[in-house]
Image (tube, rainbow, N blue to C red; front, side, top):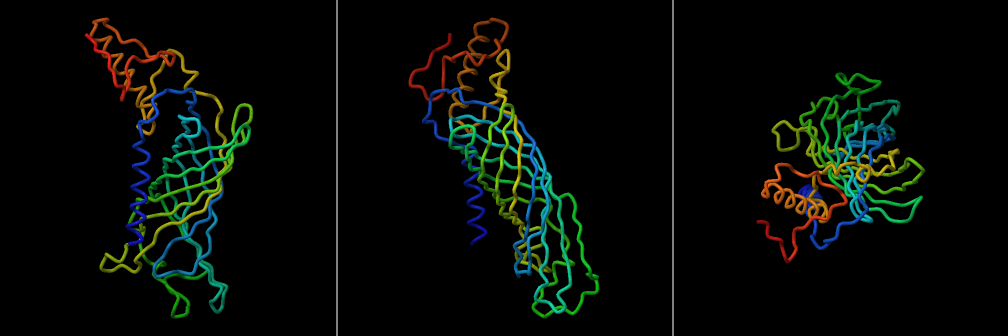
Length: 296
């Protein structure tokens, strides 16, 4: 039931990224598109069932981030990262307690996040939240004992993680973070603390006839630092380059519908060309308006 509720939360977040209210009908001047690079430290564990004695495994993450600001306090962020997951075992209750074992798993991850910010410049806070997926790339382990001839661990010590093969190479889950943005002259420095809760098992779970674990999903705390450009890319585009609409925003939907209707009008009037759309142009038609203009 807990896993089903987690999947329900993920579906809710996906829907919230795809559907928004059409209550706002005015197009505003807060649009901006920025690109940056990021990197930071990660601390990973695995939600094993039966449980395995663990401590956090240190790692790293690095990638690129694209941020689109649409409303005064709202935007979206898309990310692609190389990230290290895994776990490190805690042998403090073993006799002797000198054993060491860690398992690192490398992933390419992608996230689509709602970005809610607050406060005034040059420092403002923000909250990010949304779904994340990952593609397994490789793995390696490090130990000071032979995993094929295990020492005499206590009877309560789980050993299935040493020989279970990785079955699932696609990971998905929910990520959320909170942080601060320091706006400088040409760039912004973004500091964030983020938590990822995985919803998919990488070992074969208890539904398989030979499964050892009923759960083996990733969990991770990360502290990325991002440097992102402060340039308003959209407003600097000359000639009215059209930005594809994202159904995340009511004003984007409105803008797209108006521009599309305008282009249809020009073609129907046999002008033999389509005018390039300018950000300075106010479209004659928008979704949701009570009155629509009839084009002959």
